Image (cartoon, rainbow, N blue to C red; front, side):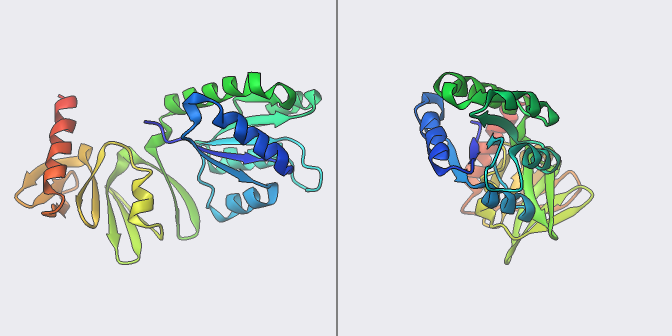
Length: 240
């Protein structure tokens, strides 16, 4: 199931709340993770790498801010390309400016109840087509890194950090294993207290260990053994 994480960015709190309420009236998105941010708050998240949304609903013009929604969207396009943008505005003339950036829909606020559901449906279709859940978004060594999950062999908790092991490199970040696990696709299963493993990269199972494509070995913990084997057998049966 697609994990929908929405951020609404508008300089008017009342408009942010109207957009949120409109989404929550849509049956398909009642359980979506909806966040509201001022332009300053969202800009801080973009700059610090804590931006973690796959749909951004952006107002275009901010009355008391040197930035505008289009310039912020260009930053999102360049740093978080998996995020789908929906523009909103009270001014129809702004519609011609949105083509300066990558977006999927322009919503005139006075027509929100009619057009926002169409915009949301299109945004979700694009996420599904792009396979956005195949992207693992982390901050490593102060840099925002977007990793293709199919290239990840395992995710390991090592004391206060999380190691993301790949065939040719390793990334470290300070998110918890629980936080990282929320982003992982269905190809990953927990096999040990400190490990999630990508079932696509399991070469063989040898007793209480897994051997991966790069010959690394990962332990199978007794607590997770039964759940691991159930998930792995189901994975194998679906990929025969």
